[in-house]
Length: 217
Ligand code: G3P
Image (cartoon, rainbow, N blue to C red; front, top):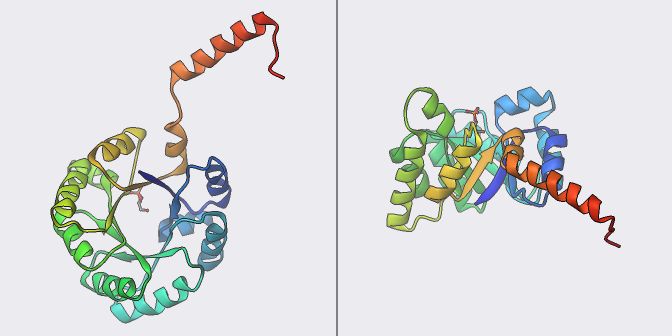
């Protein structure tokens, strides 16, 4: 499973990239707003830190506007994935952009039918929003399973990018189902490392080691 960080905070991205476990970054207009940075500038900086796909979202709602904005975004770096919404115009733009060699992340997917359309439009990534479905008492993880089944039935190459991740178990469950990628806020990625038995185990090993009086030299 590839790990993407869902943030536009450079310091957080650098810290995660340092682990060697970060495969990409996803941004959206809300995350750009939260960063307080200029969109193009911050995305360019992120592309300099992470070699893998960096999603940058168009904000136009019509096909021509999306294509115009995508033209600006794709010039930022070779690892840009243009993010388009799951609408008829978005999927038309997806088809044109992917046909032209760009990576495309189709976002705001909430149903298996939408995911099927995105794959047909040649999306590189489909982003089903797990947390936002759970928030309205629907089953976000069921959507991941349904998309996995449909994509495997037809050998679609579109990668399932589990998005709107709210806690570590979302990551684990999505991995068990076979989501290709997950994108999560850095805080949640760091939580994946944690287990109280790891901490107590380290403490007791260290205590015993100090009692030996030895050093590794
Ligand atoms: O970036 C897309 C998605 O991960 C947003 O998540 O937490 O705003 O529902 P959230």
